[in-house]
Length: 158
Image (cartoon, rainbow, N blue to C red; front, side, top):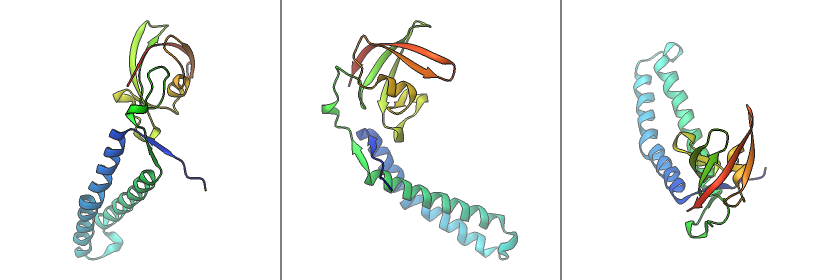
């Protein structure tokens, strides 16, 4: 099995580390306590509290393993190495939607920290991958479910 490199900004690395610490230090204990309380109710065959707590425990443990693997395979983008002449992970890119004459600024991040509602898009997303390596002034065509959208790169910054 090939380990996939997880590209992260320093901020993204910190968030994953904080989530892992919270799950290990707080959430694990909370779930263990819920399991202990549910066991005190007796008959496990009809004990929904026990089933829910065990399911949550499996989810928490699975997320811990996932986070540990992501952190083990993390490649942190050094902000000093982010160029402003071409789009790369760590770039803040202002693009112009040519059809709607609307400017949008996206922060290009790795897929692990993408959050479109915060305008953080993955370098692997359709828009992110179309922008990668392109220069200011370039017009890019992006395949989206509705067809092709044209964007012009207006600005690139750190």
